Image (cartoon, rainbow, N blue to C red; front, side, top):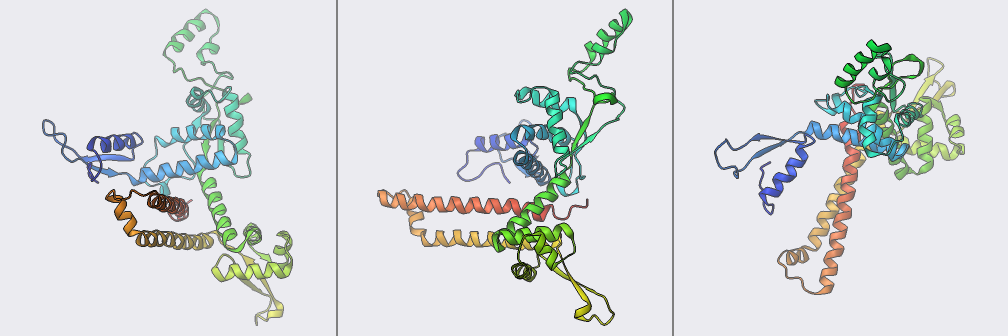
Length: 368
């Protein structure tokens, strides 16, 4: 879009875009030549791939913050920031795991916040995520780089004798101030990467569960989770695992079958496919359930937008009078404030659904 717009001061627009450029979200594609009027229109282009990569990062950091705590999320954010410097292209084409980063660089980025006691604190938090039910972190070692066991440069510990001491001083003077750490007895520094694929897949699973819970209830969401876990399971066993009576579980399964969240698979024991000799197993596909959730999200977003348009149409006179500054009575001002509050809530709901659509739609075709 252009650098100017109605109701916006050029300098404020430029400052806003310049702030976004710090993260690479915008880039100029046409500017005034040197020596000419610099106040003329400047064309800017949004880097949608950068936006998608940033959204992908925010989803991961937010999930870690909810799963663990904000301090651990800070370490993961530092890891992703280091890795993102070499990322290009669409978020859907990025590898499943982020680029491995050594512990020393992660600690160097987070120690300024004074949220961590030492590098061991960072290591323990990352290892806890590695051993979580959702393996969010992968640990790598043996990269051929020997590291010292304490946050002291290698040269300060590797020298022996006067000759070694002088060599250590020379190396210490030119070495990076970033501390290096050992991975226990292996003598190598641990490297960490974020398993973005595992996080995204779990978020998709939670999204479908939330959709089913809102439409069919908590018990149906629990039943769907059981079917997803076992892939193929009989009706009686699914109800038993979900702690539901068989009759109620059967009704809930058929309700979800009608909208495509579960499927019924026939396993005949004879070639004539006689019902008495056929087993009926329930199964669920995350891809199919995500497709249903996507359709529901678009329908919900359409309903919200139609509701906002209806509200605006019903109060068009009040809105026009407010634009002209003709509202003076307290009752009319209160009515407009109430209308504005409803608009804000509808906009927030639309943004929340937008986030869900991005997770389901944009990241649904990952080639992992």
